Every structure is written in C-alpha cells, then in structure tokens.
Length: 240
Image 1 (cartoon, rainbow, N blue to C red):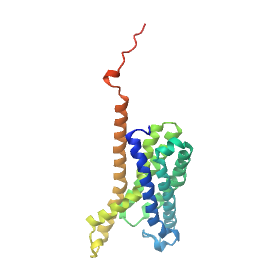
Image 2 (tube, rainbow, N blue to C red):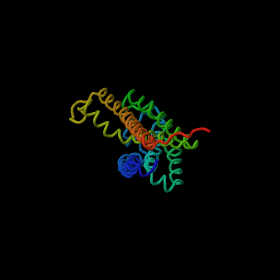
Image 3 (cartoon, rainbow, N blue to C red):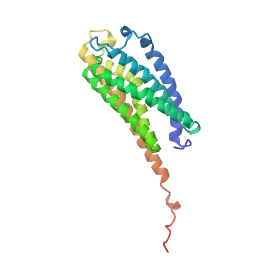
Image 4 (cartoon, rainbow, N blue to C red):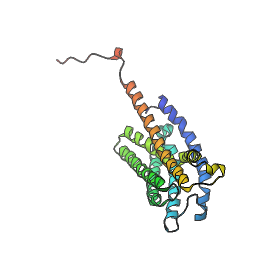
C-alpha cells in the first residue's frame, strides 16, 4: 500500500493515538496485578480453580505485549522505512503476545464468573478468533501474500483492542440493563451478569465489523484505481 494514498495517511495518523491509548489503558489496568495478589484482581477468582489466577495474570501480561506491538504493526512509515523492525515487532506480537495470551484466555474463559455463561462463550470465541487471525496473518506473510497478510493483521489488531473497547461498552450495557449499579439501588446479579456478558460480545464483534467495513472500502478504492479510464485504453495488439 502506497504511503501517498488517503487510506495509508489515515492509518499513519491512527498509529500514534493507538499507542497513547494503549499506554493510558495499561497504566490503569495493570497496577492491581503487579503485586500478584488475587484479592486485588478486578475479576472474581474462583477458589476451586487453582490455575485461574496465574492464567489470568499471564493473559494480562502477554496481552499487554500484544497491545504495544499492535500499535507498531499499523504504522506504515515503520513498515516502509524499517522493515526489519516491523518484522520483529510482528513476531513479538505473535509469539510473545497473541499466542500465549490467547491460550491463557482459553484456560480462563470457561471458569470466569463475571458475565456468566454469555461472557464465557464470548471470551472463548474471541480467543479462538484472536489466535486464528494472527496465525493466518503470519502464514500469509511467510508465503509473501502481503495483501492478505495486511487484511488478516487488521482483523487481528481489531480483536486485540477489544479489551480496550470493553470498558466503554460495559459502562453502556450496565447503564441500560442494570442501572441500579450506578444509582445505588438493589442490584439483580442475573441482570448485571447479562449486561457484562453482552458487553463482552460487543467489544469484539463491533471491532471486527468496523475492520471488515474498512477493509471492504480499501479493496473498492484499490479496484477503482486499477481500472483504467476509457480514454487510456489502448487497442489490443493484432496477431500476425
């Protein structure tokens, strides 16, 4: 993708805001887990699942690497001027971020109490798609199918940032489905779990829909640029 296209300019300007958003998010989200104290976890830790908290901390750590390196992956200037840095940050995104982080989600999601069964299914599906899109992007790059590689990585990065999108979605869903949490009234645990579970679905489904919309627009724009104007068409060579 040429850096002179409007699409590339938009992605280039997106890299810095994503990096700033990531740092701000991690500054708020990480501190409760730095002391490795289950009592400070923002999620309920089931006592009968001994690996839950270690897997949760592992997911948070590897997910933080995925967020930081994802910001580098959507920076066209870095890819164009420092391809080696782009490749190595991509490998770190996959090997030190998505792969171990996704496996950790699969260990945590079926036993998470927050969000109930709705949240468990949402996070399990997210983990599978997160792993699948990143691996597909890596395989496409290895096969030098770079257009496919970029499309898969756009999807993967959209899923990576679902954890950030979940914060506003959860506040909105709680305000709609369990407003008592904000008003201080008696809270229905089932309604609260449903609200949190719905927000977990929205956090990655909406991100993925936006990514697909963006990809479809870029394909259409690229196709229009490649179709020659009527006056530019040259007559086919006549066989002799």
